[in-house]
Image 1 (cartoon, rainbow, N blue to C red):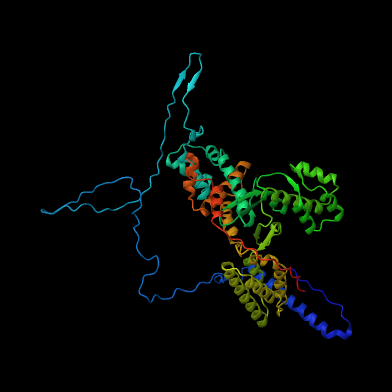
Image 2: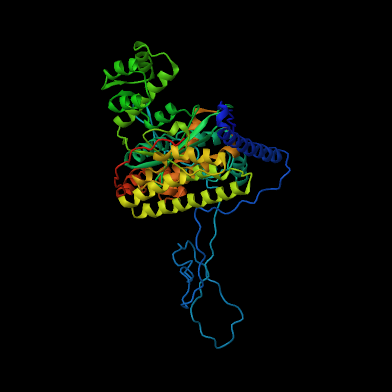
Amino acid sequence: MRATIQIPNIPEEAKSELVVQLLEIIKQQAELIQELRDEIARLKGQTPRPKIAPSRLEQREKNKPNTNGKKRPGSDKRQKTSELMIHAEQKVTAENIPEGSTFKGYKDFIVQDLRIEVHNTRFRLECWQTPDGHYVTAPLPPQLNGKHFGTELIRFVLYQYHHCHVTQPLLLEQLSEMGVDISIGQLNNLLIEDNDVFHLEKDAILATGLEVSTYVNVDDTGARHQGKNGYCTHIGNEWFSWFESTSSKSRINFLRLLRCGHSDYVINADAVAYWKSNKLPRSLLNPLSMDQSRTFDNDEQWDQYLKQKGIKGARHIQITTEGALIGSIIEHGVSRNLVVVSDDAGQFNVLLHALCWIHAERSINKITPVSEKGKKDLEEVLERFWQLYKELKAYKADPQPSEAERLDELFDDIFTTRTSSATLNNALKRIYCNKSEMLLVLRYPEIPLHNNLSENGIRDYVKKRKISGSTRSEAGRRSRDTFATLKKTCRKLGITFWQYLQDRMEKTQLIPSLSELIRNRSLQNDWHISIPEKPRSPCWF
C-alpha cells in the first residue's frame, strides 16, 4: 500500500480547515505505519499463526432438534450391494452340522475386490503371398493404432498421471513393479502423442461453451514451460472448464483465446465502439472506421495494415488490436452481451465485465484499524456489506425491478459512507467506482456473485504444477491443458473421467461429445431477464 500525503496550501484565515486536513493525513500515516509493523512482524515470525474465522458468506443455521419423532433425511439404511455386478460366485459349505438339520438355502456375503494384473496378448497376423509376389497381412484391431500397448494400459496411464497427479518417475516405477516392460520414453509418448482426438474435443468445448453461455468465470495462474515463466488462463462456468497455457497474460492474449482457434481480425461496429470507449484519437479512429467490414486473415496481414495506417505508438497498437479481436470474437458467434466474471484483473475487462464480491470484500477486511472508533466503523461496514450480499442472493432467486432499484440505492448508501478511517474510505470509494460491475447481477440475475467457479477450477491445475513442475515440449504443454479441460468438464457434466477415457480409447462413442452435452445442458436453462441499466454514477470525491 502506498501512502498519499499532500500538505495543502491553505491561507492563514482558514487554519481550522488546515487542522482538519492534517488530522486526516495523520490518520492515513498511522494506519500505514500499523500495517507495515504488522508486515514486519510477520516476516520476522514474531506472531503466531492467525486464527481464521469461518466465512461469513454462507452462514447456515444450525439444525434444530427433531421434535416430530421422525428420522432425519438420509438416515435410512440403503442396500449397499443390491446394484453391484457379481463377477463370480463361490459356495461355502458349513462344517459340523448337527444330525437332523434342515438346509434353508444360502446367506449372501458380498466381497468387493480389484484385480490389477498384466495381460499380454500375442496377435498372430496371417500373411499371404499373392501370385504377383506381393504380401497381404491381416490388420491389427483399429483401437491399437499400431502401438504395442493396449487401450486399458494407456487409459490407466492417462488416468494416473492427469487425474491422480502421479509423476512420470513414480508411474514408471509402478508399471515396472506390476510387470509391464516399458521405458521412460515410451511412457512419455503414451502421455503426449496421438492425442489429436482429445485436442479436437477440447477445442470444441470452448467454442460451444461461449456460444451457449450467458456468462463465464475467468482467472489465470502461473504455468512454467521450458524453464520460463508463463501463464494458464481458465475460462468456464457450471457446465465446462477450459485451460490454455501461453507466455502472456495481457488482454490481447485473453481476446485471442476467446477467438476459439480463429486467427482473423475484423473491423466492424463492435471494434469501432471499443476504440471509441477507449478514447482512441480521432486522427486514427476516423480512417479506421472507414474500413468497416474488412477482415484480416492472420497476424501478418494485420501488422501490415497498421503500418499502412501509420499506427506506431504501443498504446494505439494495443487498443486497435484489442478492438479488431473483439470484432472477430463477435463475428464468430460470441454474444456481445457475454458477461465475464473476474477478480478485477485488468486483462479480463472486456464485453460485459462483472466483479467478484469476495475479492471486493478482501480490500475492506484486510484493513487494520488504529482506534476503537475505526474498529467499530470497520465492523459496521462489513456487517452491511454481507447483508447486501445476502439480499442480492435473494434477488437472484426472485428478480423484480422494484427490488433492483432498492438494492441499487442500498449500494450507494453503503459505499458512500464516510468513516473515521481514511483507508476504509478509500476502499469504499474504489468499490463504489466499480458500481456498474458490482451490480451487473441486477440486470443479469443468472450470473454468480463470486468467482469461486474459476478459483476452484484452476486449483487442480495449480496442484499439478506444484507436483510435476514445468513442461518441456509443446506437445506436453498442449496435453496438460487438454486433459485438465476434459477432466474438469467431465466432472461438471456428471461423467466419470475413467469411463470417458474408456469410451474414447475403445471408440465405442457411447458417451456423446462433451460439447454436445454442454449444448443440451444450456437448453435446460432459461435464465435471462433484462432489466434496463441505470446511468452510471460518478465516483464520489
